[in-house]
Length: 398
Image (cartoon, rainbow, N blue to C red; front, side):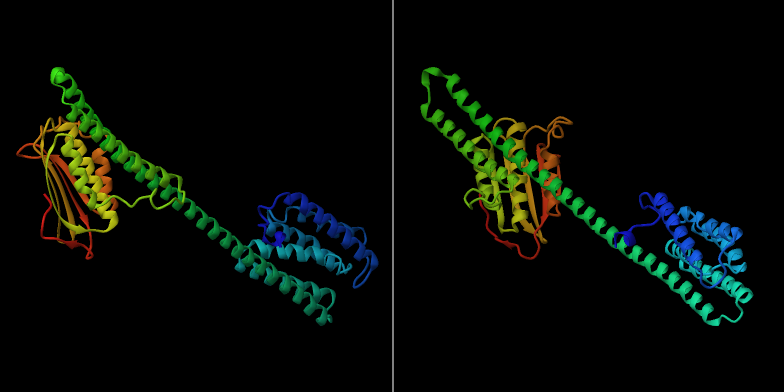
């Protein structure tokens, strides 16, 4: 089966193997010619034609039609001299099989018709009464040609199966690489959102504690310092928990439910507002959404988190901030505005904050716009599709 499945034009050592095949067929033909049979034992000229017919077999795969023509040129006068008619048959059949196995059906049928026509002419000249012999030879010619055609179609069928399997394997590998790239991007966004937000809050809270310590050492407000340090510790604990969850997802380990917490969602927005207030921002929030799909809720949470981080970092001391989340026309609208000074051109694009927010919005099929407001300050607004399953609440959370 390995020999049949292998493409004869690309098989290794094909010339060497065909040379060995030609020698074996020539030896067999010589034995048959010496044993006698139908026709005379070849004389010197007959031996020359018989052996010369086997020489082209060495190149039968490279030029099958040329090999067949040369072989027939040698075999035809051999038969015309009424030499042993059985001896050259094996070599002739090998040549016909090669033509059928390596060519098109049309070429094979034309070749078969030509060989049968030549056989009829030679048989009419050498053995006019041998009808049974003519039918036997014609049957062998037709059988060998159809065997070659069948093998050729079988090889094409096997090649198509192998090609489909390789294409499917390439598709699976590409899909796996795409999923890995998407997961790496998602983890990078999570780490950026988490670390940027937590580090910014820790920095602001540390500055507050340092200010309290250095402002008036004579009147040290221990309660304010203790509160600032407690806020820093709480922020560190929250960041550590989220970071542990993200790293466990990265390791793809099946861990307990408490270690792998649920995705942050809309219910975490009040905590973000409270953290921003601790950092000195005057935040007013309005949430008119009771629930949303987990992926949409997580995207909205991360957008608000990054927007508030940018406000605390860039909007100056004690900025006025407004956070709004509401549902309208099948979309969750997220808006974070502040009245701080507008960043200089290029300031907002130096990091990954705005890029990450836009990727968050696109990951759930939404859009996000960010830029300075006409009346001053900066605004981040996003629209995230929520579908028909969204439940809204007419009240607000301030």
